[in-house]
Amino acid sequence: MKALYPLFADLAGRTVLIVGGGPVAERKARALLNCGAAVRVGAPRLTRTLRAWAAEGRLAHLAGPFQEDWLESAWLAIAATDDRALNARVKAAADARRILANVVDDPALSSFQVPAIVDRAPLTIAVSSGGTAPVLARRLRERMEALFDPALGSLARLAGDHRPAIRRAYPDPGARRRFYDWLYDGPVLAHLRAGDTGRAHGALLARLDGAAAEPPPERRLVWIDACPDDPGSLTLNALRALNEADVLVHDARVNETVLSLARRDAERRMLDTDGREDAETLAAKVLALWGGDRNGVALVSRPARAGAGSSRHGG
Image 1 (tube, rainbow, N blue to C red):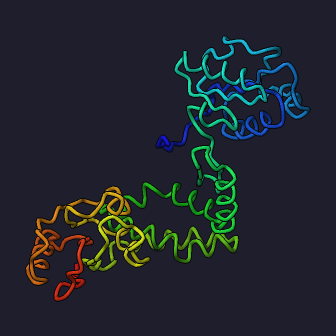
Image 2 (image 1 turned 30 degrees about the horizontal axis):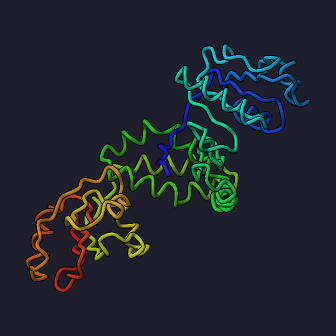
Image 3 (image 1 turned 90 degrees about the vertical axis):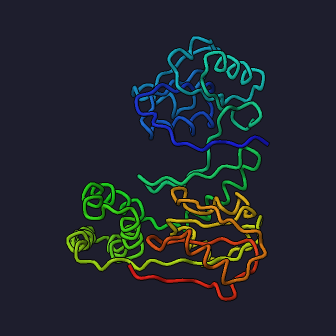
């Protein structure tokens, strides 16, 4: 199966063609209109809602059978008919113009997939199975709807409004990341959940005002013994440490699948080991590579913790 590259597209004011005028086309049009797209719907007949939107000027109706010139200036195309031959024609015409096309319920024919979405605007969470298991993607979305707090959208907007001030108060990326951890786990979200925007805003500003007086953070190195190619061997604490690490010390046998669980901006440092050192020698190598100035994780692909456990250094 092909690997898909996930992305979020800014379609505000950009033309998207939907071929088809039934309920599926209506659902696609609604989502695109919510994103500010300039929607064209091409079909001989439309649902009542699509007709109303066309009459209100919210979308353009191209009446009649599909014409390739409907794709003129389009950014994306969606084939939403129950005629597979017609859908294939739409896809071929889009390909000829280098326009990405989605064919509803036909992942093999599509050049992009529309994911299941959890909307906490401006926060958007998308889940895709690459078109192979859409029911599974929908089930996961349903679970995430219950998992993600409805107040997260308000929190994201508040953080976005104060982003320049946050960067000024916390110029160090590690300190800024810790501030965001506090923001998402602390009183600000609790106030928003209670509907008290004023107190949420006040708590955020108070934290920013006190940023200069905060003590320097504690620097630590977490040692993780991991199966070289099995992410499932990692504990929840290990995964959290990977997410917080600025430096990743690892040996060559640790698989990229495991390494990819760390933050993408974490600096990777290769550990030169033949697997035969005693624990003390191995620990000395790890500590030298780490340096002690930032949070780190040592991922070692053999059980060598004896005498070389976690080290913790004050900032």
